[in-house]
Amino acid sequence: MDHITIDEYTLTEAVTHLQTIRDFIRFVVSSLRHCEVHLGQGTEDYFAEASALVMQTLSLDWSADEQILDSRLLPSEKQRIVELLAQRINARVPLGYLLNLAYFCRQPFYVDERVLIPRSPIGELIDHRFAPYLTDGGVPDAQGGVNRLPHRDTPFVPERILDLCTGSGCIAVALAYAFHDAMIDAVDLSRDALSVAAINVSHHFKDDQVSLIESDLFDKLPAQQQYDLIVSNPPYVDAEDMADLPDEFRHEPELALAAGRDGLDLVKRILFQAADYLTERGLLVIEVGNSEWALRQSLHRVPFQWLQFQKGGNGIFALTAEQCRQYRDEFQRALEAQ
Image (cartoon, rainbow, N blue to C red; front, top):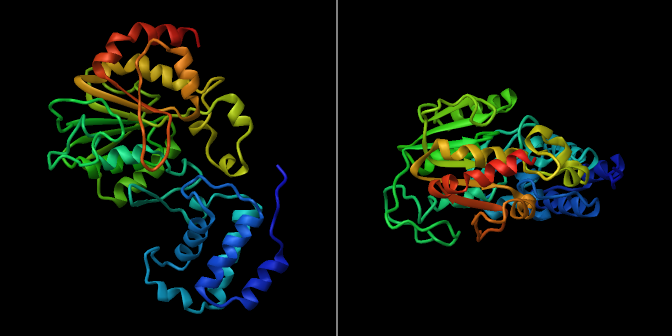
């Protein structure tokens, strides 16, 4: 796909004449905007993207004292910034891959082109401990209920949690922080993705709490294993959207994005099998993104609880274990018609 690029002369001019951190943040903002790079893989505006590129390249925290912005840079620091900027603009490499860093639930995670860059709204549910359905055993979350999760008169602390299609492991690790006593199984079909997840589980010292399992969804899980919470951010991009993806998203693994004609190939399998792996009080939460409309059409009799998010995002639903069992025949018919 043709796109606007930045030339070597402009980059050299920046290294020669710009001096401070503030100068380079401004320059990167202007360059990203002029070249119309696509955002949405961790940042939502050009200033945030530019600040992350410059500050992280300099090993500085985003919340550093503003006075540091007027610090002058070494020639080698300037050169590193413009080299990354050139890759970001000319090759359309996402910032997370350039830095090998992304944040999820305010925690840092290692990422590379073996996994998606974390950006799921499920993070907000984790922040709120899936209230009012679940609890972490502490004071009830004052924000509980804003996401429209099903209400439960007696919220409980989950003992076992399953993260299907774990990718980088960010959801599993964040769940481990949220529910300190829960045991978490993190499943992925991709051995490459699990290698990245292992880095993150180890970095956050969650090896005793999070188990990584190579499996095609439920296939290699013990038949008798049941979970109080199943969370999944599976591939859900339909064929039409895959064809129209911006260049940035084409750096991400297709296996983690594409999910057939309507984007529901894996979602329908999860729905059909989930009842067998949920406890009687269990909860299923799945992200389907833009495939929400297709799911509503395919399973219009199922009362999906579509969730809301204060920080933006949509296409995520919840079902109780009881509902998963009640509508299993519907799920089977949808799967067979696929």
